[in-house]
Length: 51
Image (cartoon, rainbow, N blue to C red):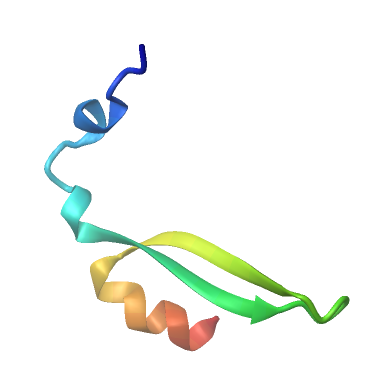
């Protein structure tokens, strides 16, 4: 059976972070790919601005 690891990882600070994803075009092939990262809620707009 699968273990529920999510409950053991939550220490109360999980709601302060957000997984952000942005679709970007590769300069080599021209194909689209996704950039993913987990950032603090205060830094979400800055992450999208720099990426």
